Length: 310
Image (cartoon, rainbow, N blue to C red; front, side, top):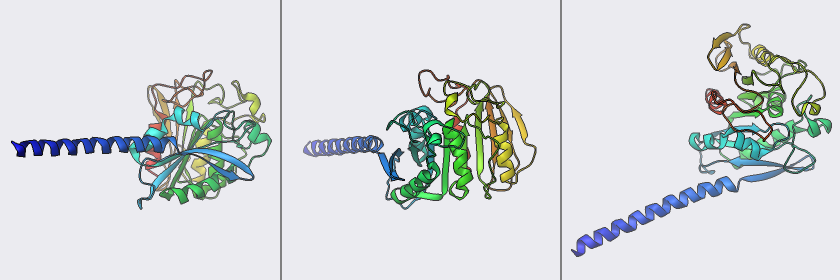
């Protein structure tokens, strides 16, 4: 009888310790997620960002880095909530970072200087390329990041900034994925290949799929340069990557995909999501007055699969 009681007590202690360990691990993960808001001084200005990584930062195993850029007037918290990339990083084991643009206020109404857009950053010629370049150096020192697997995505003004980063720093990025973004026709070949996936909405009035003057509530934040048709993004990067001139076209009930034939290790694709406006497909609304995101297409899943392949 004493033996049975002793065994039961031992099992109970082990079970309690196991539960305590699991609870502590879960708490550590939640704490890790909460405390990762950081800042970096660049060009005399303190710039903010949110970093998420749920594994051992001292690990010798190198992991990918995904930068997610908020849209014009947004911030890191909005980008995180809107895209769902933090949960993807938890399950897939990569570092995800949400950098912040600049503005008159510290944590809101922030923009990126993508040349022809947008707002404060464009008007003040903020060196956002230099900031992101310095931030990547900082992140590589802090986290076990593989320099050969660095990716950038973003929405709207953040999508335009994704293009700008790949144009200015092609050697930094293995692939980019601009969402509801555009090019303006005066971009110059960066001289190095960068795989690119673009996602646009057929119902987008702010950055029209067919191109033209900017629309929506924040059209005044541009410099007035008309956007080129969304397809020009794919045509441009296909030329940079030495891909085929004519892409294969795949029609689905909810989207149309154009896919180029490219040399090994390179890829260029563009999706037109039929029921999406100016929003992150499959994500959450950026703000109360924003367009409803498509419920038939998950941009975060599609982007991460593309990044993993490159």
